[in-house]
Image 1 (tube, rainbow, N blue to C red):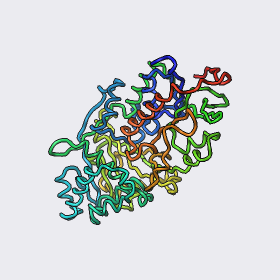
Image 2: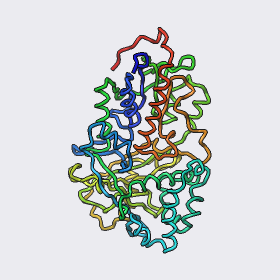
Image 3: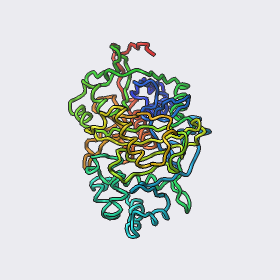
Image 4: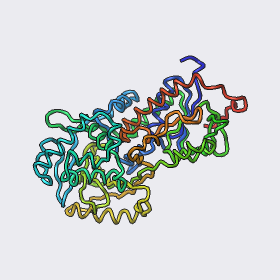
Length: 456
């Protein structure tokens, strides 16, 4: 890279998007500083420590078909900590657990009759032949599913899945969400048994972030933890730096990976239309308590729940993917519920969550010995899944914002892909391409902005 294109860039947010951006831009010779308000990198992909073991705060899926994630593991030097496993999923219906994995399971699924099972399988096949996601964006998800699957399969299978993912906002969801999920998951099926192949990393999802961060630091990237940004400095329509704890630090460009409303709050000098677009974006939150157990609960990685009276919408036992020996032989179960912005559950105390969750846990598993529960840990997050109603594509912001030299990349922008590590890191490459293309054209900073303040 020629010297004149080397620029100083601030990246706001140290999640997997921010760290991937730092890594790829540093490879291009850019001088990068990453600002993260938390005490560790990772964001939603961060970790917690329990009994000296690092565990994922939230569960994450890495599929065998996630080529970008696999590549980052290789490049970051952590591929020796990667393991592939064939996982299973089940359904909980009327007090019983059922396998729900192979085509044979589909055809023998007891809650559905023969015709309903056939139509369910047809939906999976049909999704593989539909390639126009913009068409999917104009079709309500329930209408699309009912057309192929029929009412029976919709009520028993798809409706619980929609409730699990979108809470009370499911009625406005376009067909793209289920379409994207089916296409992604089918990419992991191997052989005649159609087993689902996933992978995990020893010491959790954070392992790949940690490995990338080491590579970044070797290239001169600086990471600033516990450093919230007060404001992105904008002068005459140009992002010229950042402000934190009263100090202004000049940069040639700023890239935000923050949730849209958080970004909207720190660009007071941006034009009103841009701020309004950022601030109107709504997100689903999540309530995701962790149960740490002494023994296995179920043989499934995920159990989908059809009973709408149960507040959590799945049982995710990650130690049916992760070998328990990497987590001190504990068994880790997540009991998630996605929350609409106005959900009263978001205001519940940890004690109230535990009381309500455990009441229904006992209902599902009446023979489970509660003495095998080591801990119940309340985990929650506010900005998890962007809500993207039908026909709102114009509300999705561009990488290159209306503020010159201010760029953004977040999960709002990866649509129609799902909010997973593969889609997020792939989108990071698009941001990198835009920044690299623009960098030679950036104007030289004004003299008053050129004094670099040393703050590390």
